Length: 235
Image (cartoon, rainbow, N blue to C red; front, side, top):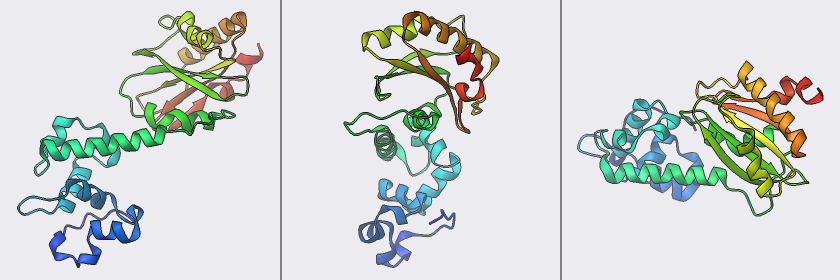
């Protein structure tokens, strides 16, 4: 069901069609984003229903992604929200984020760049600074651990190979995958990204702890440097 920006008052809707009643009968998936927000908000304010305030939030912050990026104070400043409702919205968004990161006890198998994207893109694509993470894998290419190492401008002069491989050695990893984000949203690897990858591959060969890939993450998708520059691994 698509979101509608048509304003209406909840009390004007037949009871069986109100957001909370529809969720109870049909499940949360039938509700649009404004209606789901209305359930979190619980009540509106004079002249505006909870659904109308939910619609306003989506418009003011350009949808759910912008709402996630909004600060607590920014939410509080929206007419009809305030600290209690802002806290409920932030808590619900964080629960969704944690659920997206959840994996069952069986370790996640990493067999393709898409597997890496599924594991990290939700978290990394929304970061407002560059960060570099290292995924540690066992001999079966199963994910053991994610080490978050660097924040800020990344290049071969600022990233120390010893930091990249220390965690892998400590966790007895069999191989590593390097991941970093582009806050611009475009995941296309830069020449600096390729140079950094080449340097880390050479260090991994010496330490017998290979770099399997370097994935760049952006809002627009992900890019595998190994897929784009396989010659780096064969040199």
